[in-house]
Image (cartoon, rainbow over all chains, first blue to last red):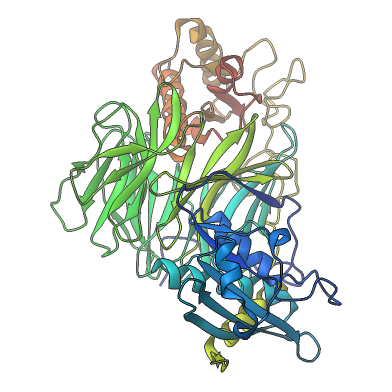
Length: 432
Length: 182
């Protein structure tokens, strides 16, 4: 029974997919010193009829982007084996590789390809992986990411997050005629698709825990409303359009509720929880300051948020049981905002102010609460963890333009995703 | 050992996800393409221009409805200092002139659009923009403007007046725009 909130289901233009023009190009700006050397041998002959389907290049780029691997340059390869039997291990070892990935991609009927691949430890010649993946043409990029995920997992013991997606807001045009697009792309920025387009601001995309829907803020009615959009069909619902502020949606871990920011008539922002099924609202914070940017703990029992109740914005945590009081978590510096919890909940990422610059910082939640500033930009905001916790994607500036950037959660690897067009902001990394 | 293990679920996942691009969609809200304030939109009131309001210079605010509100002699933007929401003395005349108009025209409606510069987090800036809009609302009400003539909205840093990563641009973006909708 939806009594309080108007539900507006819009299904439009489901016939085609729009490819976003703003493609993202990756530049690794700082890698890890002890990156693991690996040879990713091309899966197809260079003169193959459809050499554009270079799945091995996708694997190699993924591993390189992680900062944890140093893939061998193809032009230094003296032979190109496709199976384990063809590997001259001594030669590959002399070329400095610890691991070698070989594979063969072959067409099987119209629009169907099979990739057989094997991963070997070059030093002891042990076969670590041997799998077959089948995909159609459109699925080959994903297949490459999945191979990279398996290699990453096998060698590092950490689940790979290459076969995941990012959502972000792309802004094009000149004032006052700006165009805002909500885009979903592969984790490497490729394969972008526009899921929502408006001439008014779009903000704060948030993935549902099942990765099927995005919640976001849209000003399309010239007032802010929170929408939930199901990505497969494009169907969307307006879930919050109260008088005043409707902002900062965050999904509960079970996907049944949204934490969000609403305001009273005199403009006091507080955090609420909206039950998506019943539309029931529960007020979580009650303070004259600005309370916003909620984020759930994994057990759904507490919420992290930003509040300027003590003057400048700082990060607080409050339990959802009645009678619990918010506890302040950040004390270093006068501006700490927009908390995001690492997937294992050992670390909190947020925006901090340092020498007049806004940067991404992390705080150790398990130990002594140490804070570490990870980035060096002037306008670094909107951090979002990869679902494996290895990297944090965030919004930055490059020569006056909004770009996306990544930093490893230990700060050792940094890279930029440069858009060919417009401004890119507010990245949100999908769940697995 | 060349026997390769086939993983059915991987294949299925690849095939399933491979189909996704075809199903991805573009959803445009009904009025997204419109540049006319209030077009096709129940929340704005652009169509209800009051006959008692005489537009003098044909001026409209950046996003204001045409032909309503006081003329161009009355400023409709109030600027703020960094991280501040108090109205500086130099903008008291702007508040007074608009208050007088609103009191003389009880049917007039004013939307207060709060904005910030680009620095800081986006959602916290929404809060700061709202705080500025509320400061202007309170100042107008103190001068006798009826509460039901005023609404607020915060765009935070999302709708800058000018582009630029410098103090000159930021100063122009920290503002409340007074937009007459009726």
